[in-house]
Length: 571
Image (cartoon, rainbow, N blue to C red; front, side, top):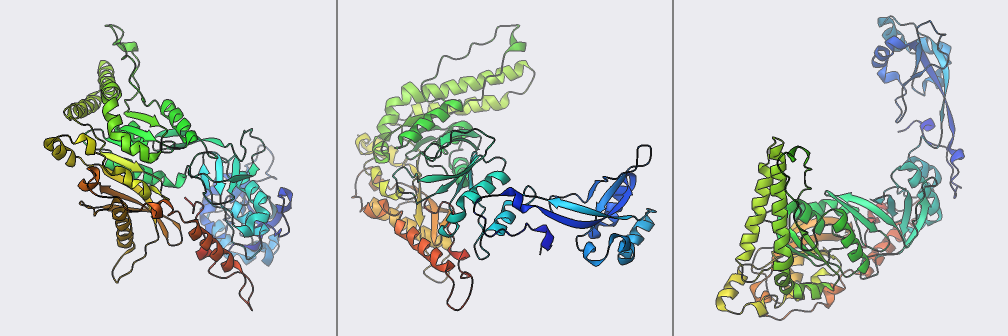
């Protein structure tokens, strides 16, 4: 337990932050020691020192001897020493100190010292514990989106919202603006209404509740976005990296269709790090705008390449600049996801010869140029030649296919993505013009990575949470597709977004009957509305009820913490 003088003074009535109200003077006893032997004395007396977070035990002596005499330092002793004796009696009350210093042949001189602490010293958690009601749960966690802190304050904290926001700004140097979500996600673009709680006074921003431009770096990509108009969740950076590395890093670059791409957290890293060719689509015009912007700022091709760089002439090699690393391709679209999926095969075949193939060959030529540039400087260019060969092999493989198809589809709209799986019905039907072509296409059915929510719980002895999630998600996928899956499914639990509610990623191969339109899709209505705001409202009610005092007792119910919902429960 912290020493009572190490916490800020209580200011329960405060609603508007007054930093001057958190000053505290702590009377201490210090030992004056020669500066030359201060480190040895510190080691000998470690257990007797102040040892408070963010403070130094050894400080400059404000009354150090005049110039020409050996300088001294002050060692701050534990705060409870003062309560037992005045400084002059310290040597007799702490014989261990006397012995340790005697062994080091150091003189003992105890002096009073007043430690002055202020608002700057205390952490955000400590300040808020001093301000909020004693039984209130202190929440200082937030999602950082560039220089914007996104909070999801509960109703009992709303009277203190601006104070909380200002403390968060003060205690986090990378944060310039704090916003609070005022209600759950309620738009088809996965955005939610926000209010600004605080801004950093000495930094000029153009942030408003409806305009929050910021910049985020993730998985080697710099993303520019407006947090007020597009969906972004920094907590998913691990999942973005997992999918890209696990599924898009094969022997040849992958052909990927990202149907609900947002601003490109899957598409751009896949193209940049794995040389994938991605057709990326989002219905939100603001997401599309930022996707196009981010493609350009990260030097990723989106169209047929420009003419190749000119090779240096003899004698110019020494000054020839190294070309930038090769990247794959990201083709942006602004369509309905269902329309995008249904037209994807035709679109790929239409643009293969004019966009995809030239982009890959240009990337291969670029890597060959990088290899030669390195070799002219007597460095190893083998890795660049291997990358060029990988790209050329991919083009040769795709050239041999009569009908080009995507190998992966990503559907990242957890609230309703399963309701769009009917778009895969008949995906290959019009292209299977001969029995031989049908057989070839059946062997190249795409792998779909679809995100969804599930509230499944183990229902039988021995069933784990993973098994329950797989059981529920697979049944719902098969219901929408109208036929059982004919290949194994992999369901990865991404995170718990609310009590009894998991976000999952299901990776499965589309059944043969589906891609050739030989079955009828099931009802999609349930999945399109699975986001279930009623569930979130239920959790909200439980959270409020849990904080109400139990009759005959004081304070909040102990289940209050269990009813907490993560900052993006409505993801």
